[in-house]
Image (cartoon, rainbow, N blue to C red; front, side, top):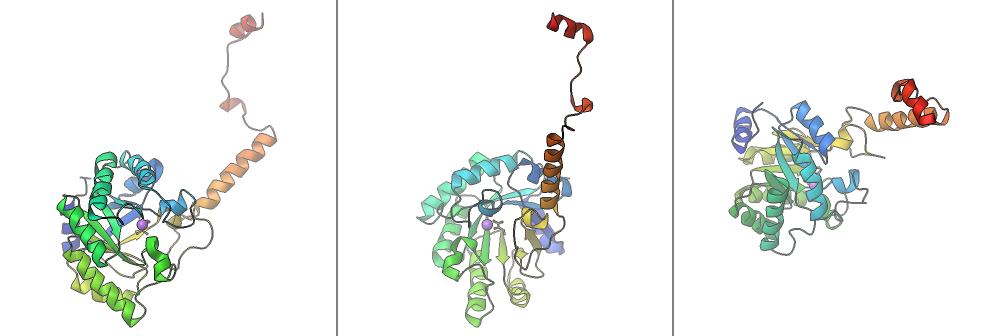
Length: 277
Ligand code: KIV
Ligand code: NA
């Protein structure tokens, strides 16, 4: 497969082909996504929770995102790699947002960066990053970095006020120059309205039908601990498989069954005789 470029993404969108995106945070998760033939990989700041064990996405740093993104980049040949700008990496100024984005591109090989929100200051950041020559993916609806201000991790656009706000933000983010837009946790019927008015591909998560979909690696593979959001579909139960594999290993070690001869190095008798002598 040839590498997925911006032109290819636009082509898929024009042809009505679904754009498949999944998150990855390290070499094996990125390799699995590559093997599966996804179009776009997101190094999401959801890493904060699913990989690093933080309570929310706000604590993860730009340096932590860079380390994860570099591991992903080393595994990817064809997918288009988008890296999240974490909370705190863009809030101070347009200049800070450009500097953070440049690090993700230069130090981790990001093909594009993703930025949450569609309020005026966010739009200014998008314009500045785009002006610096870096493609930007927007993210509206439920924006976890500022979830506290939204009243928690809850669906957006279920009231007239929030539905109008999300719709306006979608148009504004497109006008600011974003190449695609992630919409999270918004009713499908509201998303359908937005989609009809938008020229860029809309990537949904908990947003019903869109131009593409994105899910978190650990959610879709059943690795995430505890309850997941309504919009998650679990396609495997790897968390259970991982714990079972390690439990079997522990049982065999304790019983003296592991390692057996096949996992042990043999040595010639004459070598052994001389060692013993
Ligand atoms: O960080 C993330 O995984 C995301 C997706 C849920 C869109 O932003
Ligand atoms: Na994110």
